[in-house]
Amino acid sequence: MIGIVGYGAYLPHYRIKAEVIATQWGADPASVTRGLQLFEKTVPGQDEDTITIAVEAARNALRRAQIDPQEIGAVYIGSESHPYAVKPSGTILVDALGIGPHVHVASYEFACKAGTEAMYVAYSHVKSGEMRYALGIGADTSQGAPGDALEYSASAGGAAFIMGREKVVAEILHTHSYTSDTPDFWRREGEDYPRHGGRFTGDPAYFKHITEAGKALLEKSKLSPRDFRYAVFHMPNGKFPMEVGKRLGFTKEQIETGWLVPWMGNTYSGSSPTGLTAVLDVARPGDLIFMVSFGSGAGSDGFIFRVTDEINKVQDRAPKVRQMLDEKKIYLNYGEYAKFRRKIKLNE
Amino acid sequence: MITARYHREIPQRYRLEAGKCSTCQHVAFPPRPVCPKCKGRSFETVRLSEEGKIVTFTIVRVASEKFSKQTPYAVGIVELQEGIRITTQIVDAELDKIEVGQRVKLVFRRVQEDGRAGILCYGYKAIIA
Image (cartoon, rainbow over all chains, first blue to last red; front, side, top):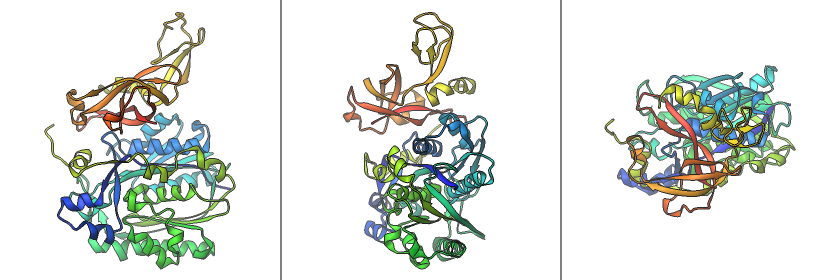
């Protein structure tokens, strides 16, 4: 049996409400909260970035897995906000966690699905027999240009998954990826903020890739949506995951456990992985979980998990993601938010 | 902070590695070549716990240039479970609610950066537990 042996999430304490952003730009707060179903989002502290988020999420995964970090053979971090353009984020993470130095490390990038890429490759290493454990992480401090619709959703957070063969808490039964050249969202080298194709990000991009990957996954597994207890989809806003789930035949009840986006925002590479941790926090042995990520550009990675008896032992070994979402929140006004996110031009 | 010094301090800043004297069991953080208690020269590397309590703290309102954009912020002395005392920022806290004796835990954060293009320096900071 191969799958997740330890999982963990991390969300910053800072928040900004969607209505504060809307008011700043003269938009109608009600149309944002109603239309996009976004109420507030996480904001990284001034001393937080993809690396610190990845470290905290991975510490929680290690607390659950209770393995020797030295036995981890690969560490992959997927993000579109790696702090260095040249120097992999994982180099810092391995030293922080006591992994390696005999370890394979790489940074992944694929818009919002870089996290599931990291999970997929970590899983494949264990499956091939190359190593005992591998760590895949999705984490981001997402960027959205001031005044752009993305500013309501671009948030910070991440999730980490240790893949292995022993004491598996969620077995990976099937995977499937779907990729095409679809320029719905991008950021050119040297640009501060991403650009997007507005409504083009919907049907030809998000919905097409998730439904195609999802349908292929259902065909491979010979399962139907009603066989699953939970479903997790990439969450760019509150509306899209519910709509894509409906198109694939899933119900609101199957989706809402991992549906963190109205209060978390879109943690980009950490989005569907963090949703998966919310599901694992409450899942019971035998539950089937359907998960499909989406990364602009564009592609989707799909996974089918089966929760095992081991889940009961690990759930309480580290903080749960709903706890992180609901407790110790510190709200920022727009000025503080702009300072935290370095949107204000300063003298060097 | 120069790159070589930062690199040298990584075991302490990232993993709280201390030196435990093989003769008298005294724990030194950061590790020392000679035990301050018994003058022993043989040490075992141990990792300190990430939990402790605030012994004292102050609020920095006028900071050096590198930290000036973070003001006001709290810096405290935290006693870890092993009795070791460290100086650290106390972050993600409402400053008027920080109290001596509060339980804290250490988290991994960016401590400073060497300008716009230099290296990023990471290490421990405390948050209220």
